[in-house]
Length: 266
Image (cartoon, rainbow, N blue to C red; front, side, top):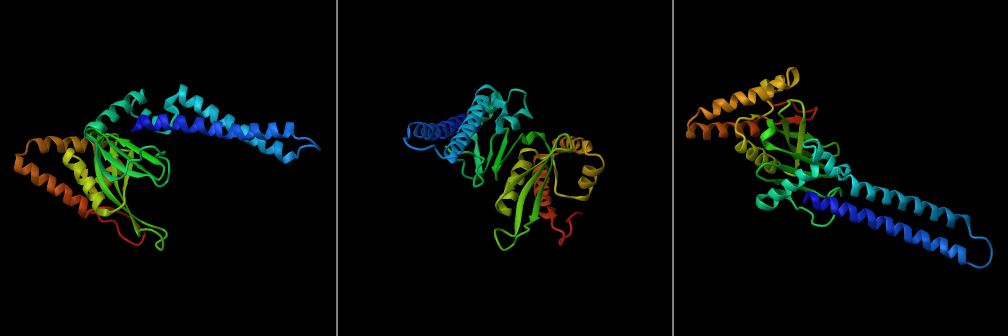
């Protein structure tokens, strides 16, 4: 969970500091006690480098102990709440209660900053995504526009030809987060699940929404709120058709980031 990552960072940093200080001390002790001629300069140089690195890790550990908000997850949470670690506890509680792993595996005891870490978790009020050393934490209720993004890879000989993501434009109309997915079906499923949670969001990379996003981004949130009133005025059957149409827009109108393919907008 989020707070566990802070604890693991503290432990790792302290361990690195000790592991660097011990060989430095052994080298200096051996140089001091060695009989014969003068000790090679390289021994002192290596010892000094190890000591400097150990001091740096010690300082980092002290910062994590006294200012946990400076940790990379804390910096992300601080953009949402001024008390990031209280917020982390709230998210962790929800995660344990009803969190669903949409994709990947959540590591138990190694750093989420490792490039091979990839997972997406949905709780009642939060979406958490970690991939390639980056983290996205957002509230689905604050999303006003959702569309799928398909990006052509630069190197087609290695890895997948296209990269898939769900782009979430937040309530201010300007902030946008990409939640990556390894396959197109997972991206479509995640986007559809977010629409089911918030049916009034704008969906699909379509002309009207694109124009608003460029010319007047705050209007996106106002348009989403207007759609909420329209949705609430519908019957149950009409609401189900509304959601189906929104999911169809997600499928039919992705944003294609590829100079060789046109944008799919109506």
